[in-house]
Image: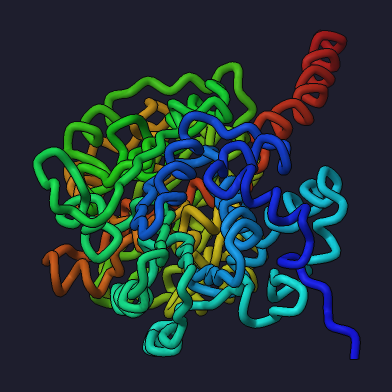
Length: 497
């Protein structure tokens, strides 16, 4: 039987090892045609060291996933009979990010080094050397909560573990993976946005990090800021400054500066922010705007509220909101009776295209149903549901979180005028929020607000958040359509005179 030819039997492979085994930067530039940025060089040079432990905290757009894929290719191709395991919260995450780049960069390597394609294979699940499937290879694994022990059992003399979005993985998973690094050439690289100010990943940048003050530290901690990346434009930074709420905002520190934030959780707005918002001047003269009536349905313990505002027709990120009238109902009002109250309150605005929003969760279902039976076209707010697109889903756990952050940004940038009530200011300055391990904004549940923070349901504040889920209709269009009739009446009167 003819013996299978492998890379180890080809003199060209031996020459490749001599040229690039200790020069991954050259491997990236020459074979993958990717010249590493100074930030990417930091990662490559650190991971290339035998027995390295490298932890990378990074903002958007630093190219860490692309360069990680090249490091994986370099490790497998340049280290005979080596093993790489790529770990993330789920296998789809690996396939959609790092595996995608492995495919792109391996194709480029094969174009520049055609003979290498005969010795290495890439499919949807594995990158491996021909003749060594399952041994000299790279695979992806998911770290499922409660099943961390399934990550154990990987051992190899030349071994690299790459963990994507490591801050969000259970600490037990990271401990299981690191406990397998028993030999000299066993390396580990953690990559993530710094979404958690505690746990294993946090410790690799603090207690376990190798620093001048901690020379016995184990981990080489690298922080990559989007602001310093040559791959990121000033326009992108400006956009994130606006959407994330400024340099001091936790989300900006995590996702742009690549830094563990000064405060991971707290309140959405300060009392000073709310006082300023009650005094701000909103100019809607040159804007197309519409009336919005946001209605929060109480449940007997909480109050039912109708909040009528002028809302510009801009996207939520640029929307102007001006308080016009806010009405609180008694706590014991029946949800169906509340529907009739909504009908009375909005009657003066009916010929001006007023949009009606009602929270349809829980007892609000009856209010929505009754309002619609009364002939009012109401938009049902279901803010426990996921947000609209993949980019928003990466930032907000649900529509409730999205609308709160849009409201916060409007207040911070002077685009929202709230009513002057002390109750409104009190509610809006006591909205506990935090960023979860996946880097998403989360608004503390009302149950936790009540039990942990002794905060009553923020009904008035909720109605202001509804304004950023609304689809307002132009009030000016109604005014324009009535103008010709008024002119006609004036002309008839002048003729009669």
